[in-house]
Length: 139
Image (cartoon, rainbow, N blue to C red):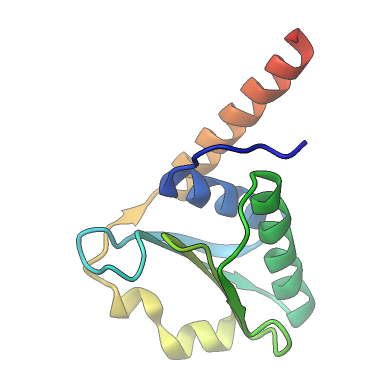
């Protein structure tokens, strides 16, 4: 079922984190960029072990975002699958191979950005999924 309506940047971040977690993304980090730049409100960064897993993470993120009625503005790096960037406007997901992540070191570049707890994001997503399932069974 496709959900429609307004979705906040933080909710987008939750959906992305949950999707990445569901396909075993590693070293997930969420950065709050709202006070630092107009590029995006949040960056989500994670690592995949192989090009196959990196594409699988990107595919799952896209699938879950489309379920919420959201399409990416652009995608970069899908063919090479060493660093896939999914741009959702106020949230940008970086799905990277370990080598690219270490080399480009986005977290250090944006070291002034507060980190958002991935555990908190995942808890919030799991709670909303439970509410949605409960509402579906009640209706």
